Image (cartoon, rainbow, N blue to C red; front, side, top):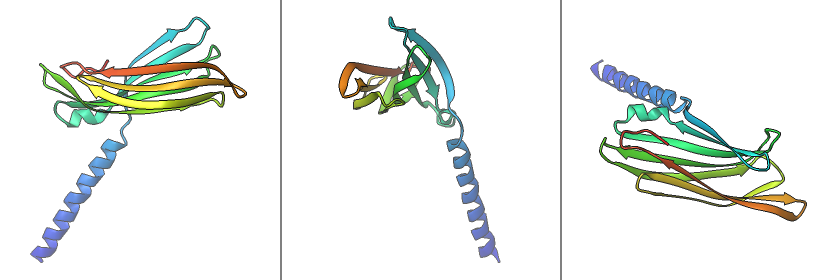
Length: 157
């Protein structure tokens, strides 16, 4: 009988741990900051910094993302570049421990290429090139770099 209780206790513990992990992974990201930069042609770039709520469960570590989305003057999203970074901080120092890039187009008139990511010091970086097409002709190319930084106190910027 005691073996059955032990097995049931272990199974219950595993189930509780798994359910907590599922709840944490399903939690939404928290938006930290939103900025807009208007361009001469009336288009604009909206930049959003988001922070993963999982960071609160891990002492002195944080992950988040910074997304720059290009909109036309009619408020239609055209394409985006997103960097996701992981950081560790102590209050007196900070280090980026990883970076990844995501970039894609919302419009058939834009293509995305040259995606890359890197990290150094306290900065996670993503790069991509957006190419605007009219038929088969290239209208313009835009190289975009998005940097996500973390302060020694764990603030993303």
